[in-house]
Image (cartoon, rainbow, N blue to C red; front, side, top):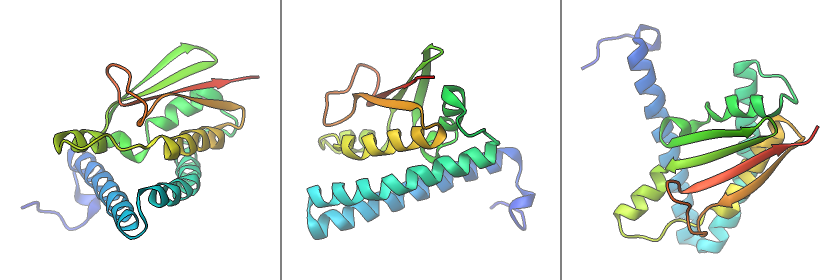
Length: 173
């Protein structure tokens, strides 16, 4: 049993564990919400509703991360790279960011908690590309409206070796 009165008594390690736990709770709620909509209205409607929700949440998440980190508006790919490291699922999934050039960034989700769980259950990969297109492009545009987003791969596409999904971000000055 942990012995503390409130969050201010937590050690650095306990705070990091708490952040991970909060992220798991958020992802569990997202998954349960999606499954409830899917059960009531079917997969296609659930994906459409999920995509609509992500279009709002991704901008909100980007705005809050920018404020928390003090990132400038129109901060380019440097700001995007920093912000991607503070998304909620960062604490749950293994990801990598590759800077191919000053005007090109590739984000790869090497291990996805949702997709890995589906594979363990012998289920097909979740077709998250429709929501992902809205999510990643909306997040990037909120960071800097000059950023363009291209999906390299995302289920239902066949994943690239070593990742579940990959996204390319470019910027034009």
